Each structure stands twice: as structure tokens, then as C-alpha cells.
Length: 226
Ligand SMILES: Nc1ncnc2c1ncn2[C@@H]1O[C@H](COP(=O)(O)OP(=O)(O)OP(=O)(O)O)[C@@H](O)[C@H]1O
Ligand SMILES: [Mg+2]
Image 1: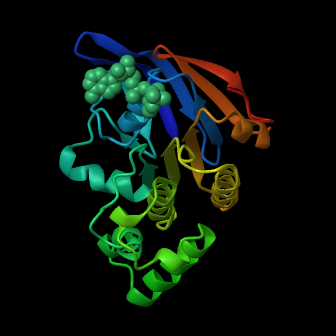
Image 2: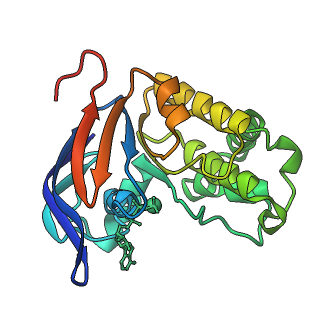
């Protein structure tokens, strides 16, 4: 699903990612940990094509990120969904409109859109807010809208950057259950998190850590060798 060799990335003089080698198989569940400023968001932005590869080789979901042109990135984004740390939802649109958008872009039939969006909103306890403008939502509600929009398309790979950062404990655990459900149905998942409790809840998941832009393998999934 992901294959990376010798990836380095810098913002001007500051090296944010240093000589990273990483691979992720289809169906894996990976936690990306590490302190603030370690490079987690930068790493995810490269995987989603929001930042161009500067050095090294990066393949994601069968796309060569070294050569993928701007006008072909929408192909990658059909297969790879991302939940950004700052949500990037449309504030002046209601919840339903935000979540249905990626399905509309794909030309999915209206009755399927309605069914899928309603099911996802229900599972994230957003059904009563479907008609509410996103700018009127709390931070945690906005975060759930961003997750709903990412999972509604049933992506092959889901990248989620601190998806539980604004949630209370109950909602964070519920969110993890939803990720686990998608994982069971075959989605490969990478979650950047600081939340220790989430890691403990999933003792079988693989953990990689970024520290000062350097990646370490902490814990491998059962039965998977690097
Ligand atoms: N647009 C940018 N311009 C310049 N430097 C940046 C930019 N984005 C990130 N950086 C720097 O790159 C480094 C890695 O940042 P990044 O946002 O990837 O960290 P992070 O692990 O996601 O942190 P956090 O846990 O706080 O979200 C930091 O030192 C940061 O200051
Ligand atoms: Mg970040």
C-alpha cells in the first residue's frame, strides 16, 4: 500500500523528515506517534500528494508520487482519504453537504449517497446535526464531520492526523471503533496520535514513531515481519 525509500523533506533550511524508509502492507493498521514538531503531518501530506517529494522514492496505493502530476492527483485521492489535523471542512455548508461531497464528485447515484451519508452520520452520532452549518459546530463535532467525509467513500487507505484530538474519552473510543470497523472491511489505516490510551486499546496494531524527522519501528503487528 505504501513503499518509501530514503525520503527526506525540508522546509527551507529546516529538515523535517530525514532519510525515511517505510512500508505498509494492504490491510495494515499503523499508528504514527511522536512529539509535536516531529514531522507526522508533513509525512501524511506527502503521502496524500499535498507536498511534493523532494528526495527519495514514494509509492502510495500504486501511484508513483515522484512522477504523479497535479492533474492526476484526483486519481490518488479516489483511493486515499485523509483527515487533516485542521479538518478542512466547508464552514458555510451544512454537515450533510460536507459529507456527501466526495460521493457527488464521484458521480454516485442520489439514493446511494443518501443511504451512505445517513449511515456514516449515525455511526458518528452526527445524525441530529445533519442540517447544521459546520461553522456552528463544536471542535469535536467538526472533527467527526472530517472523519465522516473521509470514510464515506470507503477508501483503500485512510490517513488520519490526530483524529481524536478534540474529542472526549467516550467519543475518542467510539471513533476508534469506527476505524476498526473500516479496517475489518479491508481499509488500510494510518493514524497519527499522541493518545496513549488509544494505543493501549489496540495492542495488535503496529506503531512507528517519528522523532525529529527520524522514523523508528516500535511495535510490529502480530505475524507481520518488516
Ligand atoms: N509550512 C511549513 N513551513 C515551515 N516549516 C514547517 C511547515 N510545516 C511544518 N514545518 C516544520 O516542520 C516540522 C514538522 O512539522 P509537522 O507539522 O510535520 O509536525 P507534527 O509531528 O505534525 O507536529 P504536531 O504533533 O504538533 O502536529 C516542525 O519543526 C515544523 O515547524
Ligand atoms: Mg501535526
